[in-house]
Length: 357
Image (cartoon, rainbow, N blue to C red; front, side, top):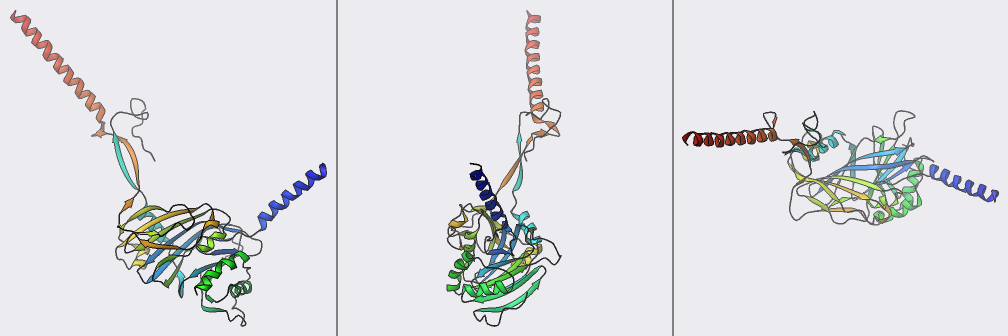
């Protein structure tokens, strides 16, 4: 019996150790591959998409966790792409534009925190080049962008992409190679990025610097298929800048997309680099993927039937006042004074009647 218990404990321990050293990869629109036995996971992917009907621009920022000091990231793109660093202030500005509007609601009668129940007034709620033998992978461009070594590739076979990754110190998981085949069949290209902080010993953790990827496209597409390999629920935040309000054509296996903002905005700051400073329609979309394995394609976004604006509101309740004095006190005091005046008039009339009689 003791031997059985010991064997069971050893099996459980082996399972736990295996889960710690197995690499975690996949994110919302590409594949994130750590080196060796390191772990990396994408907690949140936030992207800004600008489409003018001909050219698509995607600014991506990942929030990652794990202990990996190096990682590779692959993103399929439908055409020849250019890559450059972007400004993190872009996301701050979009947060300000799309954040909920705060409004104040007043109430008449005092509540728990108002006088005379309390003394407090107010109640507020609140890398090295590829091998020459790899003719199936073409490197169409390579740039060093801060902590990112970016290679723009063409590949006619997933195995060729596997070789390129291995030459750069990474191993392409078998499942990811199979998921890349549909892109190869459609003659898509890839953006392959080596993430290696220039500061020695620093792990890839927290929000990474955003990258801007630009390519020609006759439709607004956001690659998501590779995210089906993720082992944990995925979260996607998408800011879409276009001529009209946009919506995903389908759920692609996730929860219903939630629109958190829709409306015409005037870009400022870092946003002007994407829009040229012109007014544009901004749609902010959040979507959860509780079971990533159900993802069955890429997001294709289309214009809605009408450019209906939408905004969230946060209401703060405050006691109604006039000149700093609660309205209910003025009203009650006024009512008492009127009652006293009426009573005085009645008593005065009664006195006059008695005097006459």
